Length: 294
Image 1 (cartoon, helix red, strand yellow):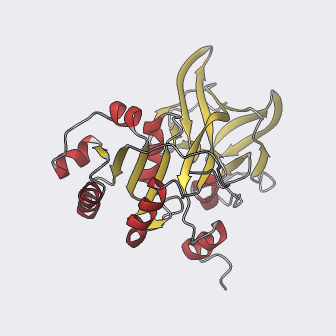
Image 2 (image 1 turned 120 degrees about the vertical axis):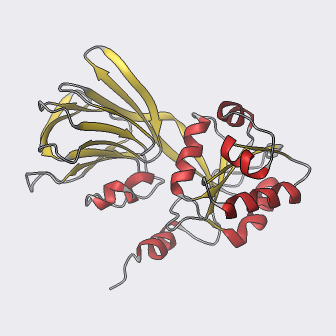
């Protein structure tokens, strides 16, 4: 397979296929069984919930991620983000089949699953290499969390919290004090997620940059900004409040305290997503967002 370009080298043989499915979705379990029957010369592994639904041998998530040569996602974008987190930076291609309602990253429609699977296994598919962010949470000098995200890092207040102060710096230089409900730090892939809902820009996923989007800022002049991907962003919570949370890709989080510092920078790892050859990025925007319609 190639990362958006022809590859003269022989593609790696994809012998072990890990399947990650939307939980509680019977259609996903049915598709997983069909995949295993159709490609019986391959080894198929399923995460615990899917293994229970299909009767496959149970493996834990660590073994599944470490053994996979290819990961098939049956669900929506949230399921794909979960799958990318399981891989923990391993450069394993992800074939996302859309069983959800939106599907920005799960580009393959269900009827095209088997033709795309044939192309992937034959080494004829193209991959998009997506930027990830490294996120670290410091409390004083103590490192509390270190993780990676494909979409976004979100600092947000709880339901009853007042507006909060977030001191932002880039490469050690003070930028501004956001008086807002929170701050979103997004990848280009994540630009069409929560950041877009907070009036952030749409950024093509091939770009190497980081988007900083304040959530409901009190100052109208504090607008979203896009910074180069090689810069380090720090957001420090300056308010005295007990109801502010850090959320990482919508999958994990932790309550924040005053003077906690969230550091975000480009990760050395990437996420490889199998492209739908029949649909480019702007076609996805037009189809999913009705982009450009009046």
